[in-house]
Length: 195
Image (cartoon, rainbow, N blue to C red):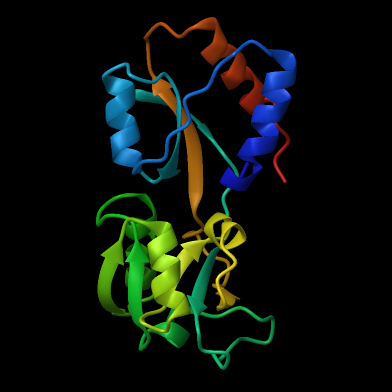
């Protein structure tokens, strides 16, 4: 399941359990983990990888990364994808906070390719990041979900298939009581077909 499928999943859940109320919030994965530890929320969908020893996890479908830029002439492979080497000279503004989720995966992808990217910064606000990209201030690398949510005037190039595909997971505290509502949601997610 990619994050963009969440509204459909919640609609299905609402049809099964019409009297449930929701608290939907967007935060960095580490913040969501903190909220679960403090029992402010029971479940979260987080970007992986993260240190999750104290959590139970249902791994959700991974999604590819895309290089986004205002440059219409990025060199591409025959199959239309690009490699980290093809974008190493572009100034990059990366999403998220260093060491967490997406940022970590992107930097790790460059490291595995033995390439030093031209990082000019990071931005935790995805809408603002996409504005920076659309004005030509910088290019970025984002998960497919983010690309589908934003219609900025940019060019998007899929980065070749690699183990660095962005993935997410539904998490909750191990060995702690979960409400019936949370257990039903976990069951629904675990029964989802993977594309």
